[in-house]
Every structure is written in structure tokens, then in C-alpha cells.
Image 1 (spheres, rainbow, N blue to C red):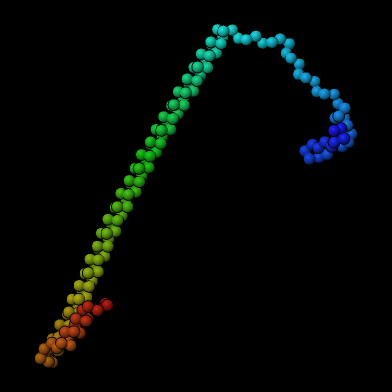
Image 2 (cartoon, one colour):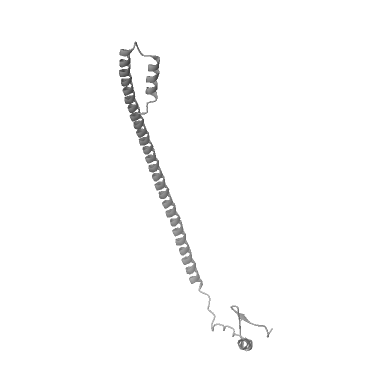
Length: 156
């Protein structure tokens, strides 16, 4: 197809370049080397094979040692990880124990405050009762219910 266009990297070649390529001589064939290389001697072949065998053995030993090193590193890393997790769990347990002690102390303090408040209410009630007993014959049911209500529902 001598009239077909030639495209190089998406560009159409100009007409004169296309014609020059059509009339150019074909590329020359590669020339054979002047002298063929003789095969190596059998003794050298054995030496090459032994060298390759030693090299392969060294590579295999290095690979096995590398795998052992990686396994050792992974083992140390996992032991370190387990130790850190254990330290974290121990610290969490210690914090939880401190929190329980703190809550018990707060509860004890709250009970002490309520006990003091109850003592104050009872003291006030006894003062009121003694004042009332001077005025009347004794504690009435209304006095008892009022004292009980003050004791239970005291918000101070």
C-alpha cells in the first residue's frame, strides 16, 4: 500500500518523508562474529558448578538466618506487647481500687454529715419538746410526726 499515510505518535508524516522511507534501502542484517566462541573446558565447567552450588548454599543459609531473625524479633515484640498490656491492666485495676476507696470515703463522709444533721435535728426537737412539755402535758402525735418528717426530709 504505497499510497497509505504513515502516522508516528499520532502525527501524519509529510509526503516527502513518506516517499523517502519507501525508497530507502532495507536495514542491513547483523554480521556474524568473526570467530565462534569455543565451549568451556570440562574442568572449568565443574569449577563453575561448584561455585554456583556454594553461592546457592550461602544464599539459602542467609535466607534461613533472616527468617530466624524475623521470628526472634516477632517473639520479642509480642512479649513486649503482652508486658505492656499487663502493665495497663494492672494500672486499671489499681485505679479502680482507688476509685472504690474514694467512693467509700465520700459515702462515709456523707453518712457522717447526715448523722450530725440528725443530731442537730434531734437536739432542736428535744429543745422544742422540753419547751412544749413545760407548756403542755407531753408530746403529741403532731409533734412526733413533725419531728420524724424533719429528720427524714431535712435538706441541710
